[in-house]
Image 1 (cartoon, rainbow, N blue to C red):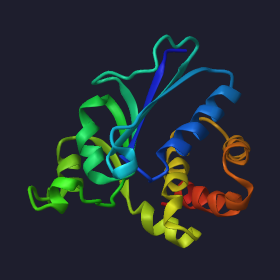
Image 2 (image 1 turned 90 degrees about the horizontal axis):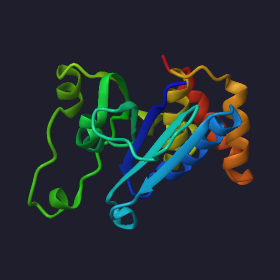
Image 3 (image 1 turned 60 degrees about the vertical axis):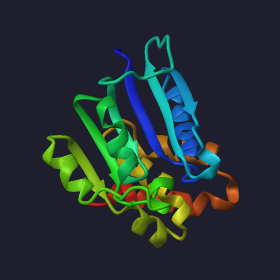
Image 4 (image 1 turned 120 degrees about the vertical axis):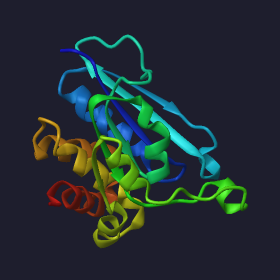
Length: 191
């Protein structure tokens, strides 16, 4: 199988590392060679975070170059725009429409770009942009955006819901398991 590339992007503290761990577990369990690379930036202070997940018959490098991502899963809209050049032609963007002000916006040195979701779609990107935060809140916690997004990503993958559930059970602490399963289901079943 040709190597497939997924980028998970967001802001520190949003749970992108758990999402990449879950995805890596799912793919390894399915028998693929998997490489996961975490790049942190200033993740502890709300900075940009990106994780590369690559899988196939044989994966030599964990890094995704510009124009190579089959999927970009974005936890925040500005991060989706920041990493869009990494999406290959025919690739898919799955993005939470949440807007988190970066430090230049907080300090007044810049303004958050308006109508980013419309601009992304107008650029011809195959985008699935939705309110993952609202779904996470209805599951029981704003911190479950990561599992809502993984649920949405699962719609575009050939793995069964049971395959995903087994990986969720392995990667999510027991005390948060039911909440995270609910968040995953809300993302997966959203029309």
